[in-house]
Amino acid sequence: MRKIHGLSGALAAAAFLATGLSAFAQTSYFDRFNGNWSGGGSVRLDTMPAPVNVSCDAAGARTKANAFSLNARCRAMLVFSREFGADLSRDPKSGVYTGVYRGAKSGPARLSGQRKGSTLDLQVTWGREIYGDNKARMLIRHGNGNAFSIQVIDQINGKPVVVSDLSFERS
Image (cartoon, rainbow, N blue to C red; front, side, top):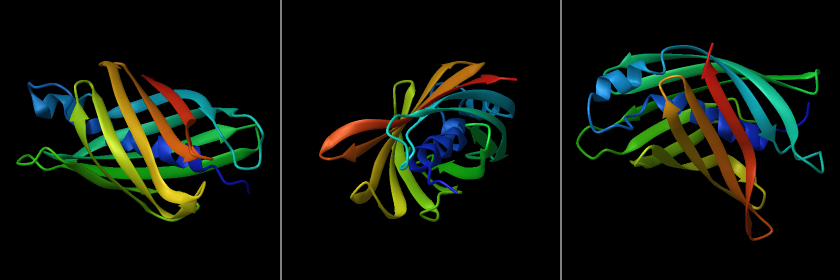
């Protein structure tokens, strides 16, 4: 089975969309991500010279007032399928988001970051080195109540590279 590190990161991000992007009604923002989502985009595979297209289905649910969980499956090249999941919580006092992504070949990844405007900016700490280190950046952008996007950016040969770029819509 091929390693899909970029997909791992991007998918992890989906779980973290239940974080508050608006200054009002934090709880209603979490609720925006309840339910079923579908989407896709491009993911860089370690074994492929160019990114490949993937399609994904996800289900999100708020688990507590300041916590969210996402479980999903993505498919690529008609033969690859990977399940993943993530849990994210927001500390109401500090505004810091932390969580765990499950499903990466490198093992569980830690997530930590803050909201900047309409974007959740998270540092990903993989369970082992990927592309020469164990860090990446994940950006989750909320377009409206029915769409969001996730990008994972990693340093490859000293340059920032988008290793996954996914968009989701409510299904």
